[in-house]
Image (cartoon, rainbow over all chains, first blue to last red; front, side, top):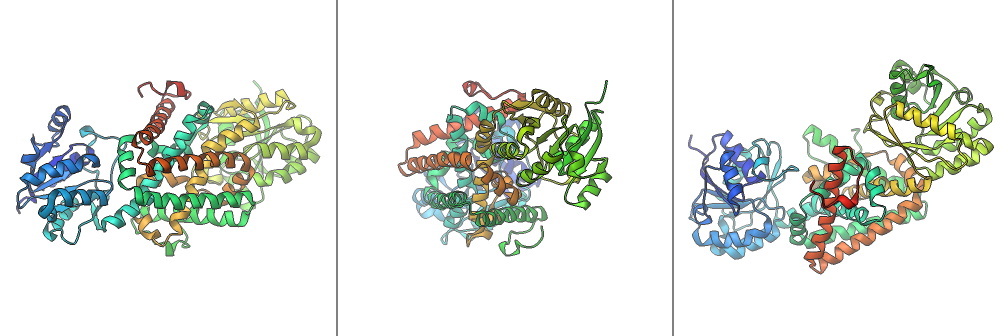
Length: 303
Length: 303
């Protein structure tokens, strides 16, 4: 059987791109891997770790079977503009950005008639660590990768990107860019904003030392995501601003309603809300452990 | 050397009380352990697991060297009223409640002139599990136990409770009940309310299945505490309502300010806030791992 990808180019060789390369290499599913990046040190490290076989330019990358853009989202428009000038007819471009509507808009503008060769994607995987040294072949095992192709996207390009991620161990799912951004605003971007907000509030307080000194495991888990890269999350918050603000609105309404129940000593209604949350959270955890999809209609089942 | 506590009574024998008993038994620091509870099945389990040596009544418990109240906080006033009628002159009563000002008020009222024999306390330890079978001797190793004695509290009673917890492996700290409640409103009660609020919001949405289906590790950690007991947390929220509402106010102001920065596309100021949070969170984690106290003044040190 011929190799799935005779050539793969990775723009931004860190945890995300490096782990994909290792996973595909482990399955003999990739030939040459070309790395493109702005840091010579980082590319040398990727070479030393076997994440890539050679370092090169965007012009060279534009000839590969698949080009994965794994840079911060803010850099993608400029990279696409350069790729557009050199892209071969058979080349498929895909990305790994946390937001999709903004990337789709940038790709449509930069690629013009070649936009059909672009498959927007978001691998739902990561660790606390970043950079080439953080990459490992098992990162995508049992993780989801969301593809958000448009009506004009080439169906064979979508199939190739799906097969690539499945070969790396992931489950692929299709969503519209809008649905993707709405869902991830709710389950990822809003929680990050809320965690950053709490830690900032405590850090700015005159009692900061006491607060952090007594903070324990509940605080540790709740705020873990507030230790994430501020630059990356600023970019994500702005890139997905409309959906994020819509969910933040709802959340503020929710907080006002909890505040009212506390003020009015409405114990029954407060318990009802806390119980809904607690059962949903425990149901979700149990479903994940069973490897099943979440179904709110099954929430009253014993978990 | 004589044994520290010839007799210990535990009212509500579950994770908290059972683990203390095991830790003290392991150090030969306790003689007889008496268990008091409303569930015969639970007491039998505690006997079978060796957490207690016998089951008995509150009247018997009132003769022990130390009586630990480890029931839900809502039950404490009624228990104290019964104990007050039988308490021996040498007996010290202490508790394990998550809020302190309300317990102190209830104890003062129930115990009258014997209030000096009560040492309010809060062990900062717990696990996902509860009940006698969850107890283990190492639970309090390197954990904090906060004591909130009042000016009239007997100094020897405070010393005995301190030594008891230190023998079980914990570090003891002294705070006023008000400072305790203000600090834990910030680092524990508010995060719980915020996590319950988010999960409730998503569970009530018509897109609930999509949301939970795509939720990943950031969501998992942020919402872990929303799987906690709704009854226990309703009681804590009401018990510490004033301090909780004050922190919730500040948090809502903080969210409004983040919303404004997003709306105004104030990238510089947003990045500044996210950076403060991220550095504080990473500094806190590093200090914990080094076993050092948090000091906000050291936040710019490389971590």
